[in-house]
Structures are given as structure tokens and as C-alpha cells.
Image (cartoon, rainbow, N blue to C red):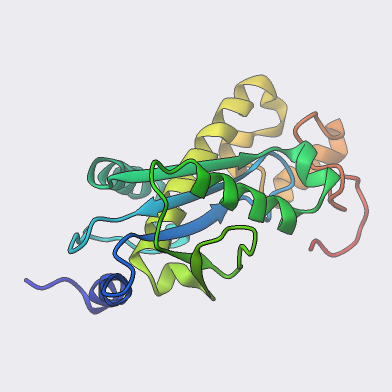
Length: 210
């Protein structure tokens, strides 16, 4: 049985790019929207002609399946880089700058320099590497989809560990995202050290979250 159309499209996109750029790297992040914890980026170089079954945007995959895909990616890929930028840096700069910094760190964490960066939505002019920002890149490129799964899985693990340190906030449940429960817990207990103090909902202001 041939793979589903969306899977064929994801991998065929990257195969076309590899014709001119053999070492193609996908980059994505997890954690731009949460009220607490770091933003995590992953840079993933998929082997040519590899097809990972069920690969897609991490947000569309149940947690148990995402963890299985994470290990499929880790076992199959020759090179994966991770970048982590903490909440203090996010507060000191802003979430977009912190996201780009995490992505740069992820690329520098690779063992070799890619020929092309396929990046979800943003550009990284600080890196002297050919690159292409792609809106909703997880739905276009297999490499970006793989990076989204790696970044999300790593960040979820970090937030689950923080739950042990700050259990009253239930970080293992919402992973720091602005759920109704999380906002109410901040109002009840106040922010903890890993909350992003520059974010409006953390400080209890009734303003739209951005």
C-alpha cells in the first residue's frame, strides 16, 4: 500500500530541495505561546529517500503517537540539533527574538553545516546558510514536520520535569499553555520562577493574550 497523499507530498517536497541542496535541514519550535517555561527549537536533517510513516505536524498527533514518532526520527536521522532559550531571556528580549535565538542554537548544535534551511515561518539572517521560510511549514516539509515533533517532545519533557518542582501549577497537564486552568492557578498562587513575567496573562491583566 502506498503512503497517504499528505505523506507523499511532505517527503517529495524535501526530495526536490535536495536535488540542489543535498544536506537539507528542517527547523521548527515549540513554546512560543505558553505562559511559562522555555522556547525549544529543533533542527533535523532527514536522510534522503527516508519515509517515516504518519509523520505530520506535531499539533495534529496524539501524545503517545508523537513520542513513538520522536524515537523513529531520533533513530533514523544522522543529525539533530536542539536549542533551548529560557523564560528569563524571553522576558529580557521578546518571544520572537528568543525563538530565532533557539533556532540558531539548534543549527549550531548540528554536527555538520547544512546546505539549506527550511524554516517554519521565520528567517534567520544571522546564519550564513541558504534558507527558505515556509508558512505552516509542518504541513509542507517532512524535515520541518520532524523538527516540530522533536521540539514539542523535548519541551513537553522539560515542562513535565518542572511539574515536580512546582506541582500546584499542573505543568504536566497544560505544559505552560494559557488554558483556563493555568490562568486561574496563576491568579490563585501568583507566578512562579519559570513564568514569563513579560506576558500579560501572567501578571493578571485582563487583556488579550498575544
